Image (cartoon, rainbow, N blue to C red; front, top):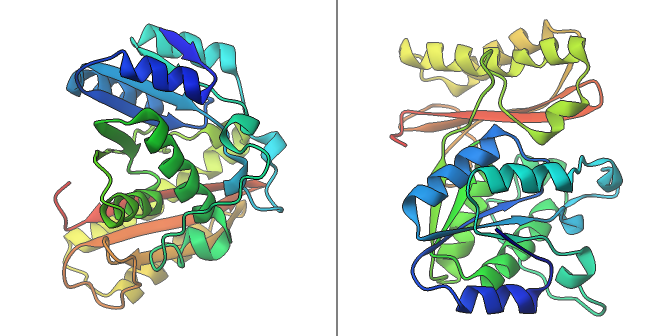
Length: 280
């Protein structure tokens, strides 16, 4: 496994490899969700690249970039164990050198949900992903469904800019009790960890109501809200039932629906989602 910290060195390593290259961009502190992406990437490509970069431009001033969990030694051990070929691990100044002032913005689908609650977040995401795609030149790039809006943003970025790669979306990986795996779960104490299961219960309620024929997004949203409000440690940022492609909010469900939510458990903000009525 090659660990590479500069753009020039990665480009040289990329030129030395023929065949397809799969790519998994991450911010590190890897869990089984990340490793599931890497395993699928390995199965579908001749070689696999992973980036580890805590991207400062997607954090707002109110978010603690310094607090984001990091463990480089552990991450590299896990990537070596699953057979990763290339790891791109640049310092911030390599990605954003002095004088950097070019930004990528995807309009429309970034203005709701996470975009509304985290101004500037998706400008940072789109910019760093576009730059990583240019550096890595992947055949396929792998993302998890847990970050549903990010997936939509990246799919639109790739389509609108005619990028020569395939975006592969993989199912959310969950703990045995249903909690979506996230690097932020480490912030939860035992009581908060128990309380965090309310996100999964709310999504399962939406799934049950939809399967039973309920098509009023307003009624499903209200039932989910009531369930979460019964958990004293939970504070709702949003509950959304939206068109899976445009992310426009729905009142009545006539096709598929992306059910997503952001909930704060103590100081930790968690997101999760489920797509209903659409084959994945």
